[in-house]
Length: 369
Image 1 (cartoon, rainbow, N blue to C red):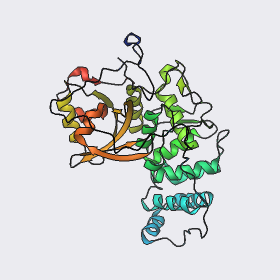
Image 2 (tube, helix red, strand yellow):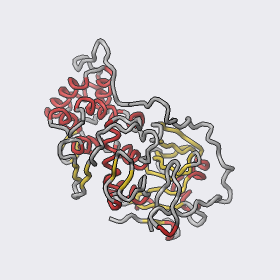
Image 3 (tube, rainbow, N blue to C red):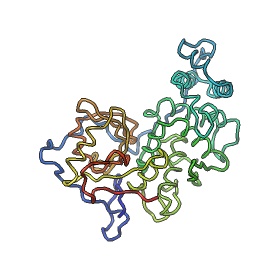
Image 4 (spheres, rainbow, N blue to C red):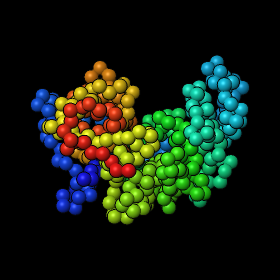
């Protein structure tokens, strides 16, 4: 059985068609839940006629920052860099130029992100290669470098789904991938080169779809378009190639199904995932699992949000408050856990998170390989 979320202005197809069906959301999955919460705290959704925000671009300022005048923590981090990573840092420093971009690069230095490796390649080297090696047609290497530094330094600010797109699942995968900056940096370097493909250690290959570099009036910067289009292309590949210009697959459908999201998250994280449906039968254990999450634990959840089916990244809980990231408008927020649970329809859990849980088998969905 296949599950999907129907994003903004999307109607479910007939149940008999199978592919887009989702179990009906129960109106009261728990006996003692609070009344339906309001969304007063939420920012207004972007309207199509608004000027799109293009994040990740740095402005040019005077009095440039210098690697010769670092604070103690930055200098200590620089001194620990392997020579190859230090050389790469100096190259990227010259490329990004502006103070705002250099400040983001210093964040990566101080947090010791630059020497992290994926398959033997450091973050600094991946960033360097964005300008030392050829990029795909239509991709600006210097803009790509600035946007990549911004995304790695401040993922919540610079991960954006855009306006009127069905890419919430892919944007969330992008946000989750920032937890492994070396993999994300290599992912960016590989999918934007002339071949446009990135292969994981297990052999799975992500391919940049044709047209991903083109402006689409979504308000996303080029890096968000490239990453999200590539993730859409891989995750929904069973339905044919993804067309970035129309935001559709070969079958004419929009958006990722929740099991496609779970399967792709499992590959990127390197650990199996399961989807658990929040209903009357699973409610007690579902609540226990969610409320036992660590303060910084992240996974995707399907929610009813502003009268739409939507995907958020749950980013942990503490003192009865759930925290989350919303790629629709690049915001983080919090909400009383009970109110958040009331909105939640599904969660993409790590498989080991439900070990020993007394969940009905028909509430658990396992993505295929």
